[in-house]
Length: 331
Image 1 (cartoon, helix red, strand yellow):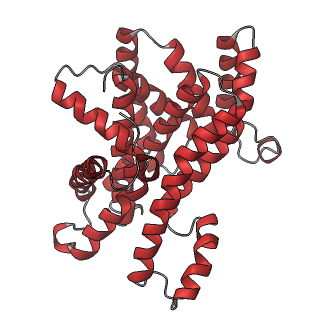
Image 2 (cartoon, helix red, strand yellow; image 1 turned 60 degrees about the vertical axis):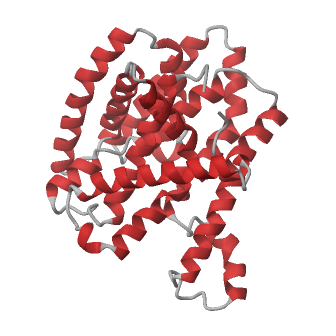
Image 3 (tube, helix red, strand yellow; image 1 turned 135 degrees about the vertical axis):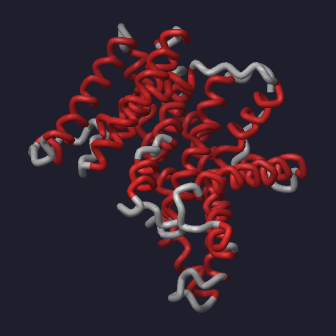
């Protein structure tokens, strides 16, 4: 694992943990307004996917790549594991009669691709389709950034337009500009922001101060606003920005912890595609140990992360299935 960027590995490991926490919370049914402390607490912790998108933005936009090579490399990397695990999840769902309308093998085969393409195998897979959309526009972004005389200024202009558009949606959602001028997509902005912060925000002490002070303040303000019925995307952007800078400035000297974080980072895509199976299993088979309580998603997510780590570790060591199929990144 030499020459890996620990900053990016650490952010990715935290991101997958946050995704697991959020899904453990929602599958348990704590995404309603009661109890309030659980709802507003976990509702504000939705940073996992934005962090993933920001990392992807930096990794895909930092160096231009010939279009055929980019499409082959990226889509092979995300589609093969997606199809592999989607098939397994679909088979499990059919076997446990999760789809009451599927009663025969023929119906199961005929409904697989319609369900896959309409994201009805598991709703968590929306992330894959969003990522595909970002990758489709990446060659255009790469070309624009490469051709720009001032790459930094172009990124700043795009981010300024994005934040302004998100703010307009927050304060004036009825404005006709919003449905007719949707160029500043939420995750496209995170994609560009990740590239900008990784390239420009390199002062660790400053990043640490901004993150350590800004994140709790933005989080508290966001939770308070949601408790009053307001959900502002711009506050989410501020939270994610501060959290990204905070995580980017973290240093962990202990080698065993570094190795574990790097493994979780390399396993993160496989974990994303499979973690909800374990969560659903624990909640349905052992309900007394996983009550509908605000603390349950916390220890559930830690248990799931540990078991997923062991599962991916065995997949990697046994090597029965190629890594490009399982989604485990190269060492």
